[in-house]
Image (cartoon, rainbow over all chains, first blue to last red; front, side, top):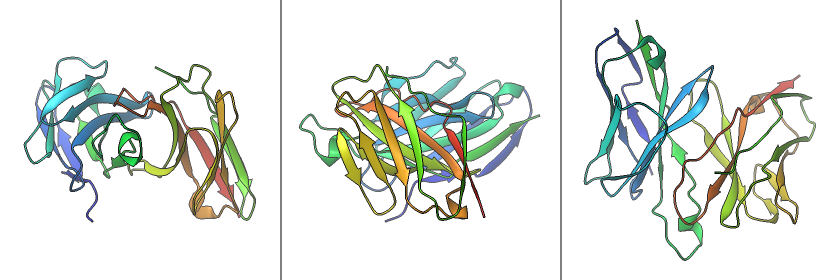
Length: 120
Length: 111
């Protein structure tokens, strides 16, 4: 089974531009979450989508947005890029949760290799 | 949201057993404890998960005391390729919440 695929792997943008990152989850996974990783702040949660709906959101400004399509693929968009947005952006997918416990409820996340964004 | 505390770094030698302890004093009843491994410029990789007592898989063991306020990841006979950052996560097992990764523990395995 193919893993989580993120495209592109590397991206260089300039301040003020916008960028869209793509994530294809593992087949059958319906939850997709996004993280930002920087040397100073570590791994920080951005948001999570499930069945095309944003269920959870981290403490990031509105310039960071996302969406999920009916095939569970997800995109993340950052508008008006700032130098501080330079980071590794990671996408993770997981099996849908259930209220009955078992493997489906344990929220194990499978990460992609990430997109390295450099803002100049 | 249960936060975790781990040592910033640890050193070990090849062939030794390594134990990394994570503190999570505010763990909730529905929270599972999950450990991830991350190599530079890669996404974190799931290692092991547990709720209480001891869990073992082909790569690691996880020890959780009865009060669940801490957990210990045990890596048997580490090799140079185990040099990585290890994250302890505490999260709700019934619904997705904002997983807090913390700073992780940088394990440096020496020859």
